[in-house]
Amino acid sequence: MKKCVLSIVLLFLVVQFFAAEKYALLITGQAADHGDPIGSWALANPGRKRHQEFWYDLAMLFNMLLRQGYEEENIYVLYGEGFDYDPPGITMPAIYLHPLNGQITDYPADREHLETVLSGLARGNQELGIPQLNDDDFLFIWTFDHGGHEGEGSSVVNLCLMDNEVIWNWEFADMLRQINSQKKVVWMQQCFSCGLIDDIEALH
Image 1 (tube, rainbow, N blue to C red):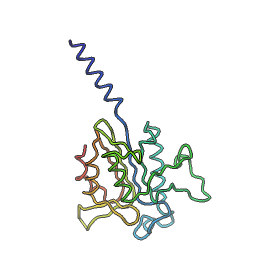
Image 2: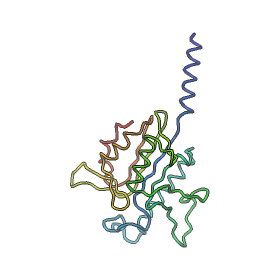
Image 3: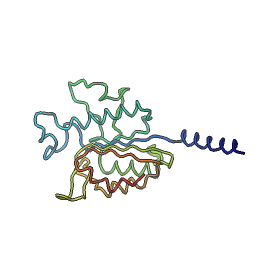
Image 4: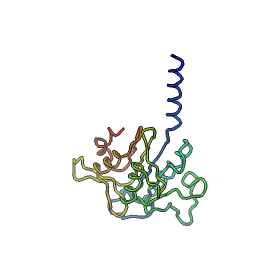
């Protein structure tokens, strides 16, 4: 009887392990050499090309995830205006390019597409090929662009997207709350991102 129970438990653990899928959502709401320079990182760092770090960090992380066993179709990339950074006359190192000369970026980093991807992960979207996540799955979310806040000392903060759109802390948390996954890891690099901790720390 003990052997039977042990076998069932082991079978359950094996099924759970192999059923789990790893997903990633990379969000960069500014683009290299694009966007309004007023108040931007570029003005605080004269002499350096505007926003290049936004693409370099995004592309490098995309390639790192592939090397860590993520399937490309499970990585959703929202960057700038929806196109990879391709500066004329510059040959970038391979770490900043798609490994098979494809397109890293899936969608523009605007409110419409962020809501579409997050709602797809929550409920599934067959038309776009976005699966509904379940409690076996793992979701990694990374953001890097500008961030803002409502006022000095305020805990009301936002994630900046393209076209002057923003996602407020409670909105972002509500979107994540709809996604049913075993664990969500959120790594945010925009200014004032610590203001989102209280909203998202308990969401698995």
